[in-house]
Image (cartoon, rainbow, N blue to C red; front, side):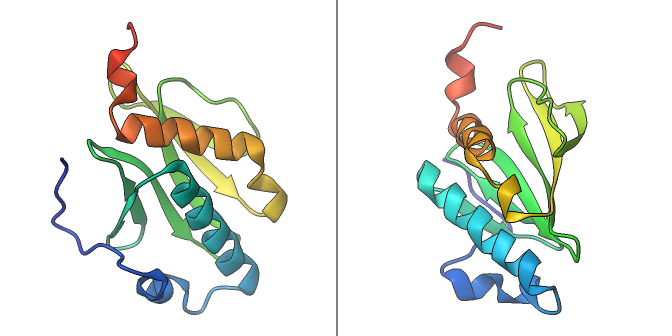
Amino acid sequence: MRTSKWPVASDDSDFDPYLVGHPTTSVTLFRRFIEMARACGPVTFELQNGPVVLCGKRRIFAAVTVTDRGLTGHLNVPRELEDRRVRKVDPLTRRLFMNGFLVTASSDLDETFAQWLREAWGVGNGEHLSRPV
């Protein structure tokens, strides 16, 4: 089980400092992102200096930052994602890629994005370790 040196969100009000001063659209996107992450299964939200980091039982699987344009962040999955929302892809390990994203509209948080988030959640819980390299 993963432990954290960062404070973790115990309820939605813990996210408020990350939302202050941002446009309503960005706040709505953030709340939808959090809702989608919770739909994947148990998740720990670390309240770091800047991003909210999403952790599974074994490792970090995503991070999100609220901006005036929407949301930026990354999803750690076992492949490179190719989509207009994915701005940069970097290898993280031999098996994982950090896929940096930009979300600017509610339509960006569609079923495809939800699928990526579920895949990343699986990484956070070690599911990628049972797959052949």
